Image (cartoon, rainbow, N blue to C red; front, side, top):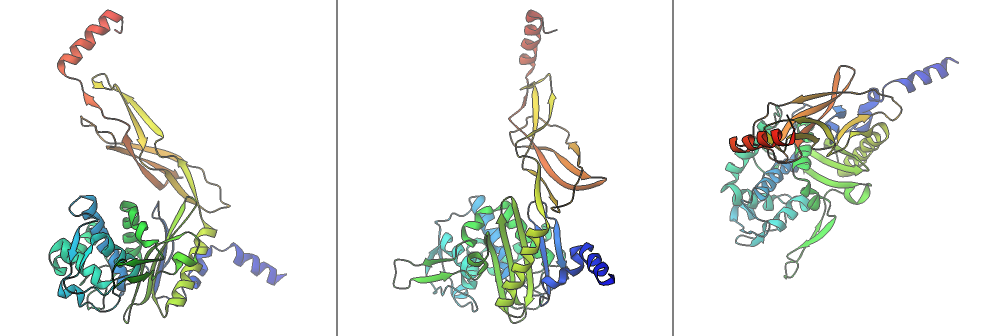
Length: 378
């Protein structure tokens, strides 16, 4: 009877008591739910360690930022420097003077983790790798990350080049949230570069979860002597996307197995619930001196919460609106809505304008008043 009681007691303990069993061989790790940024599991999340080629996620953010702002284009042709072609480690074997498109270089970075491709893009965007790395460090500082600093854009071992599992998860989430097109590259399992040449090069994704784990579509692997074997994995199943970070494993097989176990735990222990859908009208306010005369505050994205499958929750909502300044453009952020469980805010989403809104001119207001008198609006 006593043994049964102990067994039942253990079953009732929060699963996180045994959380480190998921990554027993990792130096650190973290599991995050994508849409809310909620940390589901952590192990030494702020420990500063080498992260190898996972560094390249910040390089990818900057490349995609340049594409989005139209400073560079996918079909731009990059001429490879001697410096870029001399990079060791993972590479796509670029030659000095070789010309390759931005799109193919991005494929080489995302699928094969090419150090040469990363340096070629860094030089194309910033002139030198050093200037590009300065921009990478500015980017992580802007994200509020306190345990990350880069010395190069590739992740090759170098003193004072480090990050943490939490910072890597935030970087992965930023990449996925702002630039979901990264999945077009990171989900490729195999492809070719230089297809119609004598130097045709077969690309095979260094992230084997893409072919081995249901719903896996990214994101970045890493390996050096200092870092061990690292992985930033992301998986989408239904409306739930998870980001798993595993750092400092002893080999790729253990890294992959432990990461998959951690992801299994995530999908078994939490579920996504959509409280309000994207585009839903949360509030509307009338104005007498605008066109149109009613502003509709709608959800920019789904308002989601993370729940345990068997736990019942009661939610309340808190709406915070910004002071309006006209004109308002469709899509302008006008406030936020918060979902609360008791006194704790557990999720929030932006409220945006459903359409353009402008102030009426003096003449328009005058004619409105005339119409009001004529048609009995007053």
